[in-house]
Image 1 (spheres, rainbow, N blue to C red):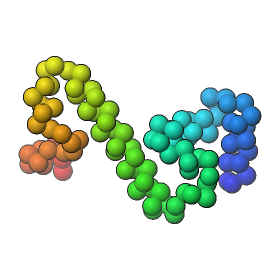
Image 2 (tube, helix red, strand yellow):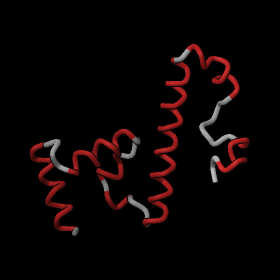
Image 3 (cartoon, helix red, strand yellow):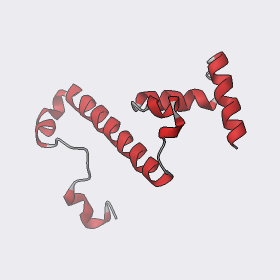
Length: 99
């Protein structure tokens, strides 16, 4: 598996082809502001810490995108003032909506 990964990464560096899964991994890590892990794999923590880090970065990105999209819509002006975080609303846990 490691050899396949190293070969694909080398192919990506030599051609910058967008048909390579390394292209998508590189782009995703770039979008999440995590390119240091792409550049130096020694920095990648153990799997449990890595999953938590990636989930945290995804959530931060989604929250920013949600906020930007929310502010674009004039109908949501009051909603944006009241809801500052992207999280499930308490009242939705009743009636089986989030269960």
